Image (cartoon, rainbow, N blue to C red; front, side):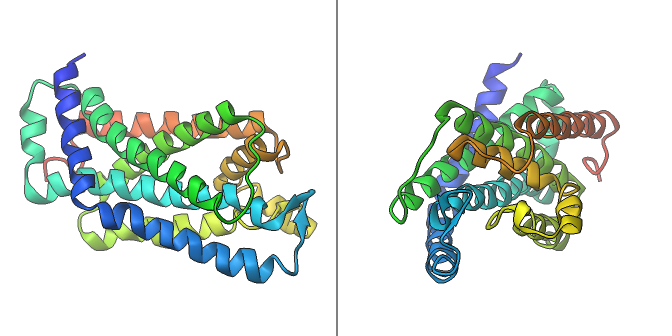
Length: 253
């Protein structure tokens, strides 16, 4: 394992974050505050609690997941897209570095940024509502697992995208609607039976459900199923990345 190469890629990506600190941190925090004003204050006056949890506190795991998923995909996809765009990807491909070391460097940096942002949003949420975390270790584990999984997914998107339009297509057209429809701001048990069943085909439901369980001890679906689905998606992304580096798909074009 070439630790020097991994560290070099990791440090370069982290340095890029500090150069865009305002966009990377301030913007998501302001957005989270606005969500609390709209959903917590406006809707919270009509929905007092969900499963015995005050509505303002109930939406915290969903808000963290909303930011975590979007930022993970964005950080990882931009991280690999710009070397492709500028041509510096050839320096990485010609270096004595394996595909796994490249992935650890890029995805590790993107996941670090996403987890840090998730914790900042969690701290911001505590300013609006009292937080209760029944399983803090599981909460951190789910946070890290989700960040790594969707950073890998973003890494694949960054390689697949040929231009900035394609780079934004999946996060805004697919991922964001799935997060909103995945129980971020409500329990799927509040839906009619047909839509409850349909929601189970949304992979984001399992992420939010497991993450909410770590806070309040209740979930819409089994925690074991949620973890299994996330690990399955992680394995699928790893296989795709390995195939990309083996075949050179969209790397040498």
